[in-house]
Image (cartoon, rainbow, N blue to C red; front, side, top):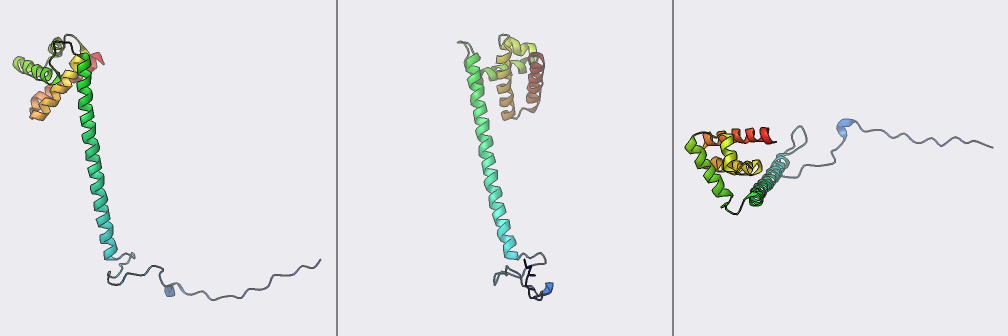
Length: 159
């Protein structure tokens, strides 16, 4: 058996690094590329695309948060409908009446809230949330803070 050595391949000269031409060439009229290889047109196109993408994401987030708030408000109203008796007039009216009662007494006491809700902690929680939201919408910061504290006390006491 005869072993033959492979033929010797010709050696080709390698071009120096400085002589290599770039694969991507600048678009005529687009400005000269900077030291990082990007032209001003490329940068401006990228920035415009980034702004457009940011705007779309921001709009999507706004729509999602608006839908979440609406569904939360609907769920709160539905929960109140399940908890209320036949003599109740609705969540908005109950929250308004609770706010009036607490403003007259000048104290957002947990016992008063429970008395208002006929001793039902779940109903008191729902009405307190609605009253707090009304106070926030009306810009009554002190009332909002007091209702928030009462809501925290209710959660600590009843879970």
